Length: 365
Image (cartoon, rainbow, N blue to C red; front, side, top):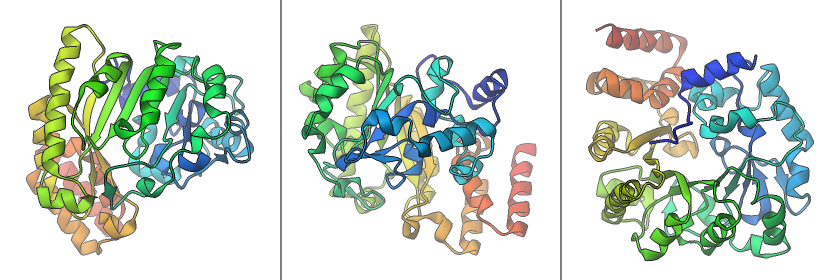
């Protein structure tokens, strides 16, 4: 249930042809900045919190937006000589999945941007009620953006012009800055779209409903990572699966209520990060979302490597692929390509050839 303007991968490739852009182009460095806890600034969530392009202790957002590194990054995508994102594009195909293409018509295809970013990712605080083993954001500081002049400057220079706010943070629905952002932006920019990534480990209450009622919600991604209680609590420490499942049901009910009132769909989806502890759950999680009429985002965990399928011995990776080929229907296999392809590409040359051929055999049948 994405926005009506979101694009399929093939539609994105068609856009590239229309604009005479290389097939490995990505729009993200042309539209987005991420404000991380502590003032470090990133661009792409796929690159992770360690991939920093600037620091608010040293430069303003305006200066960072057109600094030397970002201009170099944009030039790589315009020329097709991609180095910074070579692995992500070759293995994750993330450049085709970014919903930023909804406002592609407004993108300046120049290495230097005349106008501010179109998307503001507000990863403002580390505050979270869970301590997930694959995440470091919950260890990060809180309150940095209350210092200095950030809010006043953003109210004048950023908030009136952005097309989308994305909240990642630790847990955005537990942070006061989320509600501060909603109050400030909804009063001056009613057409702004809002996206949230949440652990949903809280109760859906009046405060949350009233905040969501004020805005146009584009997506709510619910990170869950396991439907087995023991697995869930080992991956998402301090968490109880029962709490999240109840909140998902509350979201589904609220979605129906919004649609009956002619408000925007919330684009509900479950985000499932596939790793060593949960790789056998793909069948289950796809059935779970299908039963509720919501989307699934399957991602392949790479870091920390100790939890990644990629760090397993090759024979074990082959057994996992065999399991998927034997137990996933062709439709489910197609929906799991962001897991299948990194596994196949991680194999030796002989292994790659073998499992590419087996994949072809699955669809030939």
